[in-house]
Amino acid sequence: MSFRLTLAAVAMTALAGICLSPLAASAQSAEDAVKARIALMDGFDEHAKVLLASSKAGTADAATAKAAEEISAGLKKLIGLFPAGSGSDKFKSRAKPEIWADFAKFEGYAKDTDAAFVAVAAAAKAGDGAGVTAAFTKAAASCNVCHREYRGPRQQ
Ligand code: HEC
Image 1: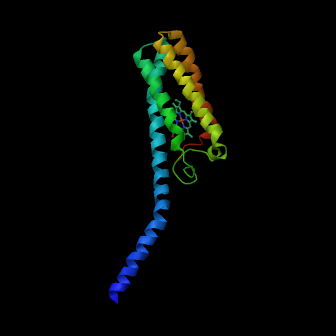
Image 2: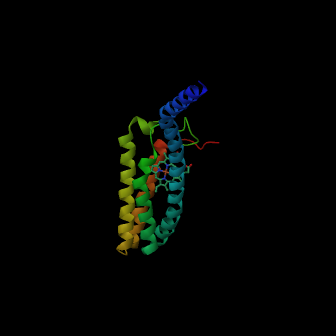
Image 3: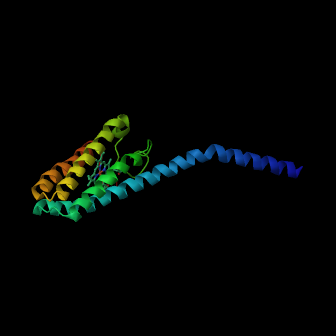
């Protein structure tokens, strides 16, 4: 009898595990996504420092092109790090709920910003210093446009 009970208990546990695991997994991955997107954009800031210096000096070299390409590659991944349910209501995050009200619009901002950084890389590769300055000014503004609309106040 105790054997039968144990079997039943094992079956129940397995069932509970099957039912609960997708929920647990999605909560876990949302938290990971929050961390990953903040880390990714902290990296953008580092590359943007390189680009700001190039922009001021009108430098069009390989390091400038690489910094712009790193940001562009990151922007292609960024959208995938904003799964539904990963907003500031649930996590220590500055992501505003408006992101998920019209996700296509948010995605459009990421694509526009990506295109702006591709233009910075192109100017750098062409050896066009004035072009780097002009393109970076636009690209940096594009980061800010998205922040103004979709990034809330810093969390304590
Ligand atoms: C499509 C919209 C969008 C674009 C484009 C974008 N960001 Fe962000 N960024 C956000 C959001 C939303 C957050 C808040 C994420 C969070 O806290 O979960 C954020 C957070 C950050 C952070 C993390 C620090 C903090 O807590 O605010 C940095 C740094 C940052 N962005 C820099 C940049 C730079 C530099 C660019 C341009 C290369 C850029 N971002 C482009 C939406 C964007």
